[in-house]
Amino acid sequence: MGAEALCRGASLVVGIEQMGKACAIVRQNWQSVAKSGQEFRVVRGDVVKRLASLTETAFDRIYFDPPYASDLYEPVLRSIVEYQLLAPDGEFAVEHDPKQWTATEPPELERIREKVYGNTAVRFYRWA
Image: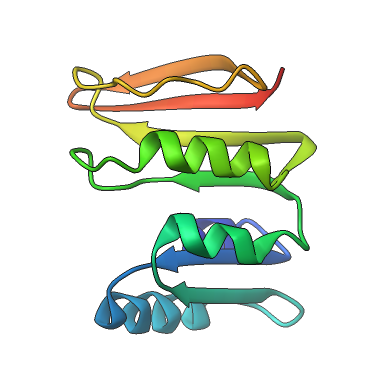
C-alpha cells in the first residue's frame, strides 16, 4: 500500500514492520517508486509501540493490514485514537477476515463503510 501511495503522489509514507528482512524489501520497493520531494520511512518494530513515536504527524490516510489472526486490532485502534494519528478529515482503513472480526471499535472512530472481497474485508473509519 505504501508503494501505491507513493505512486499516487503522497508526500509522506510511513510503514511499520516487525521483520527486518521485510523492512529491507519494503524500503527497496518504495525507493524504486518514490519521486523527488517524496519522503518515506520504514520503521522496524512492534506496531503498537512504534505508533507512539509518530505523534508529530497526523496522517490523511492510514492503512492497517496485520496478520488476520493477530491480537493487534484493538490496540492499534486505541493507539490511533490516543495519539491522534489521524488527521481531522483523514480516513483509516483496516484489513481483516470478514468472518473473524472481534475487536471493539473505539467510540471516537466512526465506521463509514466496509468492503468485502471474498476472504478479505476492509473497514474504513473517520473521526466520529
